[in-house]
Structures are given as C-alpha cells and as structure tokens.
Image 1 (cartoon, rainbow, N blue to C red):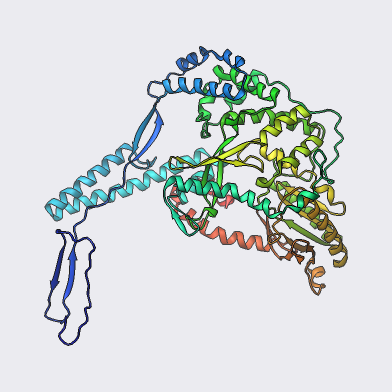
Image 2: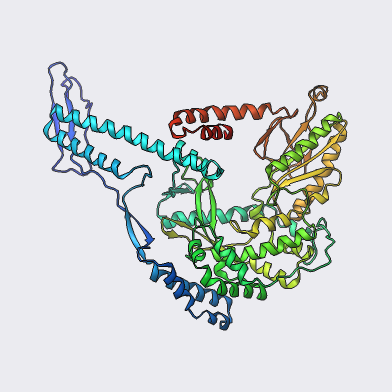
Length: 627
C-alpha cells in the first residue's frame, strides 16, 4: 500500500486457507508496485473409470446353447391362460439359458478404441513415452532429439495407418451406399455418442440422471397432449357419434371382411433369422441377436405366442412399453426441446407387428384401397416419385399458359397426435372385422414409455394418442388415417409423402385460382378439425407458379388464401424446400442450385483435405457425385 493513498490494487482471498498455500510479495527496482502472487498446490482431478456391463462369449458354444433351449418345457405356454404371464415365462426361460451360456460381466473401458491403431503403432507410442520420460529426467539435448525423432515417426505412421484404414473401407463399400457414406461422415467428423448430463427446466438445472430422465419423458409425452388440448373441447361436440366415420371418410368397395390368418412356424423362423444384429434390446432385455441365433429352437414357442395374441385380440403389456433415448438435434444441449425421442420397442413385438403388417398390406393392395396420391411408406414410391408428380403437374400448367397455386400444409406432430378412436373408426370402415378390430384397439391402447439416461430410468408415462414410434405398423396405420384427405379436394390435386401434403391447381388467371384454392383449403380445414389433427398455420404457406412473362404481368404475384383459425392470410413465399428440393415460382431451380453450391464448397474442401483416405478413383467420384 502506498503511503499517499488508501487503496489496495491486488487482493488474494481464500475461503479455505491451506497451510500448503504460499502468498508472496515480490518487490522490484523499476516500479513502486510490488508483484503479489500465490502458490497453491493441488492434485490433478481424475475422472472416474467408465464401467460397462457386457456379455462374455469366451465359453459360448452355439450348438450347446440351442440344445439347452430345445430341452425347455415350451409346452407349458399352452397351459398358461393369461398371455401376459405366458410372455413373462418365455422371457424368463430364454434369458436364463442366455445368461448361463453368455454371462454378464462388468468391464472397465479405458478409452475409445481407434480401429487403425495396430499393435506396432501401440509399441511406437510406448517407445515415444519412454523417450519423453528419459528426456525429462536427464535434460540432455541428445535425448530430446531422439524423442522428437520418434514422435515425428509416430505421427507419420498414424496418418498412414488411418488413411489405409479408411481407404480400404471406402473401396470395400463402393456398392453399399449406406456404409460408404457412413465412412465418409466418420472421416469428416467422427460421431459423438453422449447422453445429456444436465438439462434446464423452469429456470432450474437438473443434473441427477433420474431427474434428467423424468424431465425428458415429461416433455416427450407432453408435446402431443399439449397440442390436442389446444384443439379445444368444442371439437368433441362436432365429432361424429361413435361407430360413425367422419363425413369425409372414403367408402371403400370392399366385399370381404379382413381377419387374421394363423401364422405358420416357417414364417416366424424366417422373421427371426432376418433380425438385424444392430438392433438394441427394448424393455424386455432381449436383443435381436439372441432371437436371430435362437431361431431354430424358439420359433415354435414364438409362433404360439403370436397366434394366441391374434386369436384373443390382446397384446401383452410388456410388448407395448417403449424405452426412449433422447438424441440431440442442434442448439443448446441443456434444452429438452432440442432433442428428439428414439423409441426402442421389444424386438418380440416387432416380430408380431411384421406378421400383422404383411397380412394387412396384402389386404389393402388386393382391394386397391390406399390412395395413389400417397408416396410415403409404399413399395416403388419415394420422395423422388412425389417430386416428379408435383413437378410434372406444375410444368403441364405452365405449358398451357396457366398459373398454378399450391398450399403446402404443415401438420404439427402428426404421427404423435393421431386420435385412437378415429383411427379405429377408419379401420372398421376399411373392412376390418370386429374381432380383428379388437386386436388393433389393444395395440393402440394402454401403451407407455420411459426414458433411460446413464443407467437411470424415468417413471413410465401413458401414451394416449398417436401411432407408436419406432414400430412397423405405425407408418401403415398413419397412411390409413390420412388416406381419405384427397377425397375432400374435388377441384384440386393433393399429393402426400407421409404427412408432407401439398394442394395445388392450375387456372388461367389469379382470381379464379384464388377462389378454387380458398374453397379447397376451407374443406381441408374441416377435415383437419374432424380428424383432430393440428395445422401449424405459421408454417403452412402458399406459392404461385408460372412462366416468367406470366408472373411479370401480375401487379401483385401473391395468393390470398384465408385460414379460419386466426382469420388471417396464409404466407406466400417465393422459395420453399419441399422434400429436399428448393422450389421457385418458375421452377428454374436457381435457389436450389445456389443453396447446394454453398453446401458443396465446404464438403469439397473436406474431401480435398482427406484425399489420402480415398485414393481409388471410384471412391472420389462417388463422394463428389453424392455431394
């Protein structure tokens, strides 16, 4: 402190003084301000070791495992009157044999294994560490030279090994697009698999895994219920009576009632053997790998359970429970709204659903029930076919000198807000018999889900609406639910890819076009209200298409289409991304090319920086064409 004032410039404060701390005052000759510093000895923090539970296959013999499974008294399944108890018995017996042949064990994970790090590279790393330790102890320049020489060689060999690894992967997967692009993605940015450690809810930060899991589950389940609540109670009074379909439901010319056929053991065996090894286990802890390798021994009891479910119209509760894993999309990782749920259903339930899906799909295909205006979840259909249909129709209008107006509908959480009562009504009106309808009622009712975070599971919550996410039947049921939407648009064309829906028509002048679109959109709004879906009017937009001279003659090239919710006008846009393609009023694809080029340059830079990982010409050509 200087004698001329009473100020202190430098402070060192500690709330927990330690005898090992040293606070020193260093005076110097070139300034009247002394250096104050503190020496605090602390220990480096070490993160706790990561321990995972895995199975040991050291003593696993497939023939012995299958023999033990075949000797189990599976005939008892026919003696158990309750299907839930029968499923629990099957699961218990199967897992007991599984645990005896491939027991669980806890393993400490030291770190992420890099597949290109060979045994020779590991020895070089160890030699480099040894030379570094030797230099630190001696301080000799010769030792430092030896260390730097070894370190540089390690870096060189690592780059070569990594390039060789990815080059081999790319060459081996040229004919497999999925694996090829997965390798490209790993080269550019290795995937990060991490679960959220903390989330913010109501201005509070939750860190305990159980609290985090409950917060995610509340949000995921609450999204759909919040939307359905916004529709209001007045819709219930306008809904048709039970047993009656909404007035817009298609009246199919189906003369034969649909009912389930018994599933033969051979079909079940084929389905079990088709299970993909990568599928994770659901709440029942039965992985797909177990069902795949056990197919010869368990196909008969599995067929017994499936046929009992179809005959009684009941699905076991265990098969209607989903384990949900939150996956980060983008943005702040502490906000639950920036995550999407990935539902993991029991693999056994997927085998049952596949049997039902095949019979139901064949039935609808035979009677040609599904509308041709749907390109989603159908064989020989894709986003490409949907884009070609819409593009060709708009081009045809341009060639005739007409204007084409389009309304792009945006449904909020369409799959998650499907009303079960209306869905069952539509299934009945499509020819599903009463006994079979009981099975579908059991399928959509009494479902629940829980979220799993870092080994902690939230409380299960009921799922009261929507088609099951991650299921096989879900997409087909949604297609049936929305199948009659095109029927309300008599004077326009409707095309759908799942819930991505566009309504469009062509007219010679703007007033006629607006009048038709307004009439059609009003009918669509009625359909949406009757079917208890939620239209996001902020994202539902209109677009006007035509040749450049035709649009240039218009004083105001915008569409005026009113929506009844806010009594406002839908937004008209001049560019829109539809099924991955940017559309513009002239269909010149200028915006699409511009946005694609802006994304292409960084990708090409990444491809150039990693050119050593794909030396073969076909690899580079495929990557360039894909970008």
